[in-house]
Image (cartoon, rainbow, N blue to C red; front, side, top):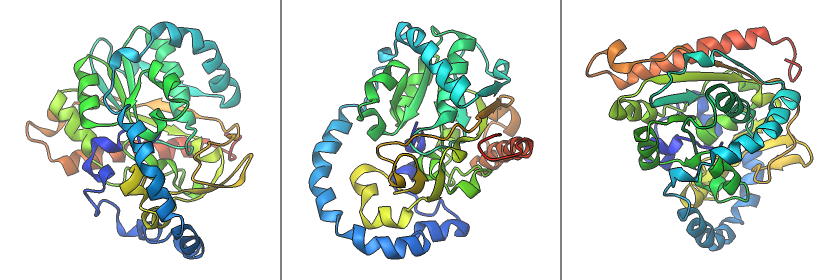
Length: 327
C-alpha cells in the first residue's frame, strides 16, 4: 500500500520540510538531469492538474474517515487462494517469525516498503498474517487516500485497508487490531533500485508517537525484493514539487521507472507488471518503548533504534541474495 502511514506523521503533509538529510537533496531539488530536462515540459501541466484536482480530492475525502467494519473476513477467506498464487508462485514469498507478533492485543507493525504502486511486501505479508492468525483477527493497514479512491479501493477496504490519518490509526489500535504502517510511504517505495538495501523513513517519527499514545508495542517488519520488480530510476521529487502534487494530492514524488508494459513509466499511476522477484519478509522482536527507553523516552533515540535494527536485518537479508530478481 502507498504512503500507508506517512500521514501519521506531520512530515507527510509537508509540515516538516527538514526531514530529509543532505544526501537526499538531489532527489528533492529536481531529480538531477532528468528533472532539469523534464521539469519545464511537465510544468505546463500544472494548470490542468489544478482544474482536475477538485473532483479528485472530493472523491478522496469520501474515503478519509474509515469504517473499520468494512473489513470482511468472509471475503478475505474467499480470496486467500488467489492471494496465495500471487504470493507463493509469482513472488516466491517467504515470511519468517510471525510467532513474534503478540497475539490477543493491539500491536503496531512497522515495515519498510518497496515496489512502486504494486508492493509485493504488502501482498506477501498480508497473506501470511491472515493465514497464520486467521481471518477473524482484526488486521488493518494504512494507505494513501488516492489508493482507496482508485478502482482497487473496494477490494482493499474489504481486506482492512483504511486511509492514513492519525484518527484512523488510533481507532484501529483502540479496536484491538494489529495495524500495519509504512513510515517511508511514497518516498521510500519509489526510491531508486540501487537503494533497495536501504531503510528510508525520511525522518518520519509519527509512528513512535502513535505507539506511545496508544500504549502498544512496535513490531518491526523487514522485507526485501520489491525494489527488484522494476528498474526504479528516480523519485521525481523536484518535478512533483513543480507540479504542486503535494498541495493538490499529497504526493511528494512523481517517480520514473522502467517497467512492463509501459517501458518508461512516469508516476506509476496505472501500476505495472512486476518482475517475479523473490520477496522475503522477516518479523523482528517486539519493542516496548517505555520498558526499553523509560517513561519519558527520547523520540529521536527510539527512531534511531527502530530504523537501526531494521537496517541491520535488511543488510542480512541483502547478503542472502545472490542475484537480482532470482533472490
